[in-house]
Length: 511
Image 1 (cartoon, one colour):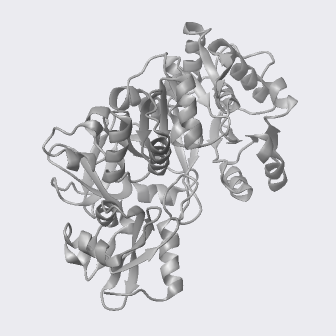
Image 2: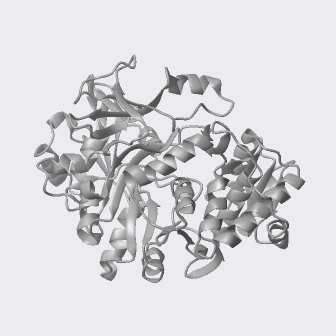
């Protein structure tokens, strides 16, 4: 089934309900949303876009993003959303790799993208042409699509090389969307989705279930994430749900506390896309209340590997609530979960291995990359590359990416465990732990620490804090005070860059 049918149905059931908003302004109801998307789908067909073709979106967050999205689906094509924070040359590479026939771009990006690409029609959504294309005669219905047809070509962040295109089908997105209601958060047509994180990724991929339910779609006027703007919009719009990376949650809490704002207009914050440290989520729940749901997923199994419910995140009565809060929850309803050894055989509860997932939301493979597909998929299981363990109750605790595990003296050390401990110290605002080369031990533990404002890095105090909670061999052998941690466009810490800094230094101080 073509997911554009969900918009078609909501336009019938909720024709006059507000659909697309820019800040506090309503720009279109559901009937208008559907008509513009269906008109754009017809126009794309007239431009030669055929079912199965790929069409790129290189846009900042705005209501036209969703019109482009569903217009592409109405035409039967696949969407290639590209993060607007990428360099235009990176965007051009993705478009070439995807074989995109056409691209939509916001005015601030269109000119540079047009200059960087050849043979691709770049449509500036800020000009009359886009308005004309989306206000003509609409298609009567979305183009027919099979469940296994490509719907969304998602390019990984590429922190260690060229990004890979993950093939996401209509079936995958259908199951992912319905699992949101079953495993993450039930909501109604009175609620709204706020797109503060990039719509090309986790925030945008939740648009379908909000369309299905007839909820409002709110884009901040800034086109991105600004903590103060989110808090202001929550007062105006109310009943807001949103996806945030952990670094965004941290900034939102800091801003809200400084303003004394409890944000009653925020209903739900789904967090994921990186490690949310226990100390940070405890502080967030203490300030905002039970508004948080954690999900764990990958582009290869989008947003639906595990979930930790609102009640579980806020619970302080269970005897193991801290351990559960440090987990990423239990398997969502649409997948199977396994911890595998080097051969992929299932390990017992408590044993650390590679996280494996199987089910209909798992990708069929990478775009035109059979070698990478063969490495990632084994007997129907997705090998995530993440290390972790399951407890007896089915809660999954992430340790680290397999490439980030530190092997010191033949012993595995998981950076996240050390980071969790360090974040419990009152002088530590952010921290990232990596392995530094060492001639005697192979690798040693190195911590890059962002102190809280006004604090000074006190290595002795941090050492004592670590030794009180973890084994001596796990404690950092070197600390570096930094003003900020390097992050990619999605808020993930670039540990590769931190390791390169160590290589440039040539040595670390071992204690």
